[in-house]
Image (cartoon, rainbow, N blue to C red; front, side, top):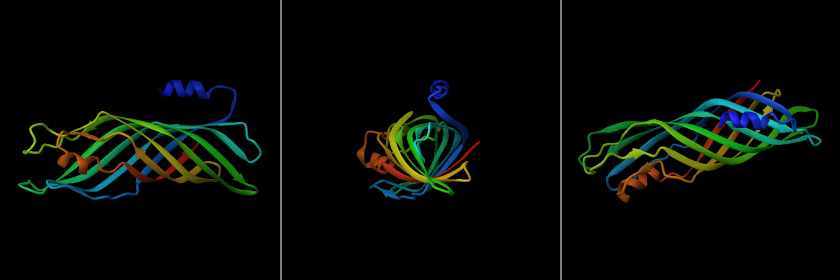
Length: 201
């Protein structure tokens, strides 16, 4: 998929192609409870290469595509409310591929640009911790694939540093389990806010 994107971005129509490193950290720390399970202290961070390909500028504005391949780590603390064995930290690691349409415009003589980006993302599970609960016959397992959409805004300074805020809506569940009382707290969060930073070379 990355090689295909690089081939697309080599088309002469794109006047500016830059490579860089993107990172983000989740701003949410939600807490979920059910009759049997408590989920809290949820954190997330991502890091990986990014590419930005922009068309020829239209005045002070640019339009193009931004794509990244991010290593994502999600962590949370689980505790069983009845007959539990104490708290347990669970971590799932994904490869995330967000592809966004991007609009960027300058601020005249000021060395500052504003941008807005939106598009879909997909994630593939690299590794994940099983959640083994005695009251359930099978372990709760993280799903191998997730997908959703995101929208973000931010600014660029010094022509190569971008900082922004991203709103992500998840369209798939993280976990697969038959019992609703156990499923709801694990999959109850479908949107999140992230602080992003990118350095382009």
